[in-house]
Length: 245
Ligand code: 13P
Image 1 (spheres, rainbow, N blue to C red):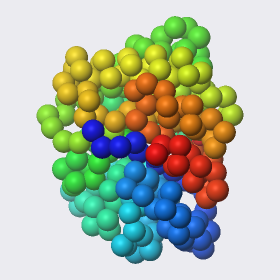
Image 2: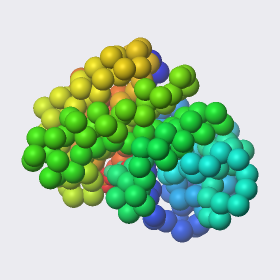
Image 3: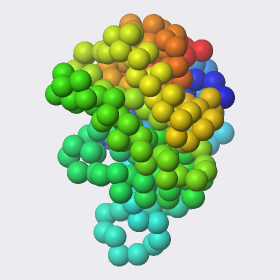
Image 4: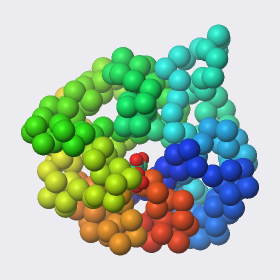
């Protein structure tokens, strides 16, 4: 497997100028201008950032991709081929905010995964349980249901991100034991259902910060991090990327 991967998910933040300023800071720093680092920027800024990142090592990621593959009458959508066309290396798929606010279900997410892979964009499938599901001790069933679409994908590279919903943007980070438990569960699920789990990177996301990144990234089966809030600050993000080695 390649080294650890850290992706900064900017979510619906920045403006043209602040996005380019942040990217310039990341490009100027060897800790962040690195093969193992990516930025998932708002769709409207991707093309300009792709130009800016040319010649750098930092990878560009989209935050979402259309479930429709072919060009056509899908107002507002961005296809995987369009993302590939401007140089996106990754796209997030099924982030919990999209599952929650845009009712994305497994059928749509499977189509998104397939479209990304077919276009040569590596999808990062996000999975994770809500607090209620954890408290009801349903979290492994929920995660297995979310992973199930991977068994429908014949081949192609993808990444998985475990993001417990209750740890996103709340400052509540999962304990190292909880992270280790679910990452082992995901790796084992992959081994049983899609084979070759050692090739699939499993990132952790949910309140990853400069202060806790080293311990999280040193946890068994954690192959990187998906970072929200802390990725908007170049200083914090560089510490997290450094912790990934
Ligand atoms: P925070 O790091 O802000 O908790 O967000 C995590 C996340 O959702 C990354 O995709």
